[in-house]
Amino acid sequence: MAVHPERFEHRVSRTDASGAAASPVSSHAPPLLDPHDARHDALPTGRSAGLMLKHVACCVCGAEDCVPAGIGEDFEYRTSPDTFIAMRCRECGLVYLDPRPAATELPRIYPPNYHAFDFSPERFGLVYRVRRSLEARRALQWCRGLGDTARILDVGCGDGFHLRLLRDFGRPGWKLEGIDASDRAVDAARRAGLVVHHGTIEQLALPAATYDLILLIATIEHVDDPAGVLRAVRRLLKPGGRVVIVTDNTATLDFAVFGARHWGGYHFPRHFNLFNRRTLERLAANTELDVDSIETVMSPVNWVYSVRNALVDWGAPAWLVERFSLRSPVALAFFTLVDSAHQIAGAGALLRAVLRRPATAAAANDSAAVASAATGRPSPEPGMSAAAASRRSPPERSAPRRRIFARVRTPLTHTLPPDRWLSRARPLPP
Ligand SMILES: [Zn+2]
Image 1 (tube, rainbow, N blue to C red):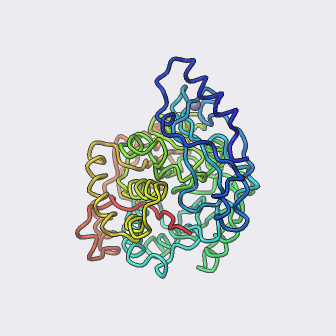
Image 2 (image 1 turned 60 degrees about the horizontal axis):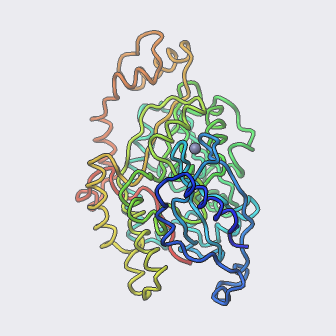
């Protein structure tokens, strides 16, 4: 059974009954798939049966008052014949996949050729090299102000791409660790010599109050329980430690244009929760994390994959579809310009949030003294939290930035605006 039609009809009728504007999906929604449809015979062996799906409520406010925002399929990997519905919570605005694959289906929806398991120079060529240099610069920005022996944890580290950047470009004394639930990802990261814990952050018994920085890069949208993950993050952070979250932004033009079906950020059925600035702030408040900053970041990737998904859905010829992928420098460059314009207006395709575990007054003063020693800047006033001090007095960064730029500069980065290009890889078709 692909999707529960009675549930979908129930939700649509509830929307209509409320008097709300008709969902944009209503006129575009395809007929619900029949798993016995002959078209599915073309699916790879083992992928012709529907996934086990489960119902969920909004993870930010707990409400079940939602309306369809988009309906689509696994355009990228075709791991199942299912039709999926992205719901928008009418109480808080979160966009979330409901119903969504049960936990037992994760090995199926993340197939062996999933990009995060093997983002290698052999597979991605020029894109890998450009992304590596730009992401190195971003990663070092996330680490600004950390001491020489800081402990850093990358949650959902995949094949260890960001950890390798920090090992190659960061300080030699940093202690780097990753977490991933996938066997294949953990194997790949360990082959690269990284320390990686196999499992989920909620299940692993890692020591509390240990880490100075935790990274959730293109991770939080994949997890079933973002609040549970952030509570686990909070437990593992030292008082005053921070978490950097990078995720898709639903308050964007690409979502407005493609959100009814083809939006790349849906990544059906692997992105379970999709945020805007407001819902991310609310999630932080729910999990007792202070917000240092939430900004948008330019990325062409959701634009490129939105066009690609539409072409795939409309049966476009392969040569045209292949013009829109991570191997398409022309498409990436064009949508870099498009999204740069939106980034200037504060509506870039991705969100980057810096959240902080509140420091106790004593801990804040201790960590401020450490930070002061590391940066040479004066300590904040007694009693002022590290977050407040950081807001009042942003880090001076000209000298470290010059060093960072010198270390990761490549000819291409001279022509691209810093911190404004690919933030992560997206999958190629199987
Ligand atoms: Zn909600």
